[in-house]
Length: 450
Image: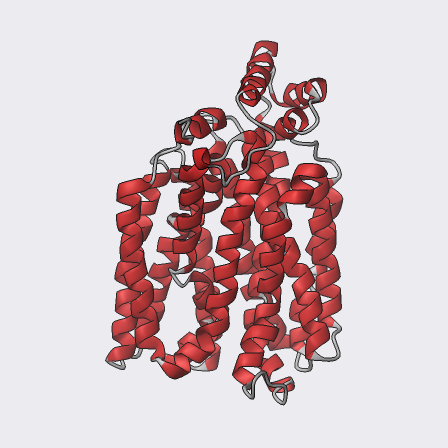
């Protein structure tokens, strides 16, 4: 097998995840300056509500739209064209939002970037899972998550540097600098081929699919085997069926709950408002900014560890490890706020929380959702899982400023810890292991033929 080409294609496509991470988190360094700049704007009489839903939430609502409708271009135009278009959206968003003259224009361009984020959670894992051999699929699809956290880390570092060296309108530079990697990614995507599974299932172009496989496999027999596996899986499908058919109830519920629990861990809320959480814990502003970088580094390191382990220990085992870490770390953070503990215990606990997420849910979610649906419904299934993920990712962080002011940090973190206890029970009872199985074998085992 041509592993160099396999990894090059996978990493290039996974750069959509880098832009996802950068675009999503860059707002954390800019949002307080933006709130001060446009503090006179309100929603239902509340500037906090306006800031949470319009300023911070705009990109998230765009992400929801991209996740809901991203399966349409992914199926009709193909994975490659969709991924190129995503790069264009990121570029437009970065330039437009950095030059915005009022909060509504800012929100519009952030919304456009959000569409790119949502669509990338469908197209990128789809492509990588469809070219990867089963024994490497976990870590290759996980390169998407790795790039997300790498983008998060670079966004934290970029924000800190720009805040230090640019005194006026630093927030505009923080957001606008994303245009550079977005353009590079878009250009690189033109050299990537189309997914061979999409070529067969959507276009019935077996010869074109073979050409893609020939770039990866040296043995013609392996190529024929791959093509036959895909073609045979298509024979038992009905073009008119959807993911909501009774026979797909199991993968549908699995996609729903892994996305549901992912967001009820509080991961996005904590990443978006990291500086504020550190401030509430009594850390100075500069220490809070450094703490945010520390979160990014922790996320990066433990995502690498998750990538290393996902095809060794399996998806389910990593979810177990992450769940236990979530419960312990979130409970400690809640106790810290309850007892007014200050010092390093809050950042250390949050670092442990991030590590638990990175090695567990973070490493697994996009891999798992990309594996459990049949070839012809993979985009629709991923769109469903991504939609659940992003609807909650839009709602929960948008409410965080209000919840912190109303029920307090103690209760917020306690709720997140309880939800992770429920996740642990769900994993034990319902989550199957997909490690080492072909995509066709996984979907067949989860399909109810009755």
